[in-house]
Length: 274
Image (cartoon, rainbow, N blue to C red; front, side, top):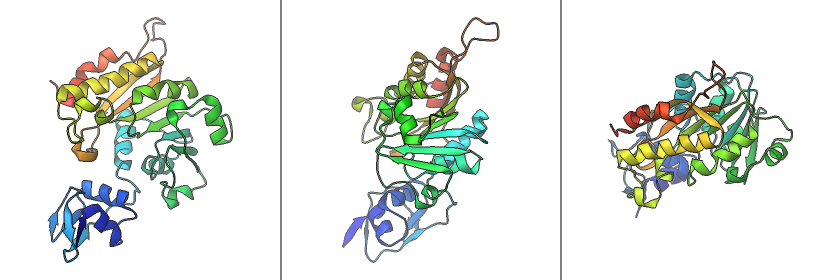
């Protein structure tokens, strides 16, 4: 009998779930009969040997994406009130808490995904079935149990364009907040820009990131940093990290800072479009 590799890894108790198994496979930590395999859909037989290499303590490989962003952008979360959008198993949330965040409100539209260890942290408030597209200051306050505005917002969202979420983010944060988001072009370019789950066109990737930056600008958020993610996403998609802040007047009291135009050349370079 044969089955998908991700299903086999989970069934043999080598991963917490099939989703976790897929993450391990994509990260290159799974081998079959001594050979690394990075495709979760590969069929394996009952008699084949499956091994999982030792990994770090993070509940999700996505943790390393946020680590790269916080370090690259110089964002200090110590003592801050944080909001993690699309928390899933809690990789971003875990990093925020380990770096000294006072509290993390970990929200996700799904249910039962937050790792038990993360959920048990008294500094984490998990909120399930929360659609961030329709988030308001009132709905967030009800979910959090208070009216404190988040000082740090992180996001790792799938199956929705960030352009639809940015107005809601801008509406709930304070004037001095930091917003760090993972941009996944596969969810920004539309169906015609994706082939078998992969965005192969560099210009399409660049346009996806630029579209997010301009949507942020329209919502009142300026760009203060753009980086390439250190890890690929599903299907090997190249992903990007952006640092946004509420738009503010420049030092001369005139021109607003954070205009996306200042970052388009960097976006094209990071996306491989130049």
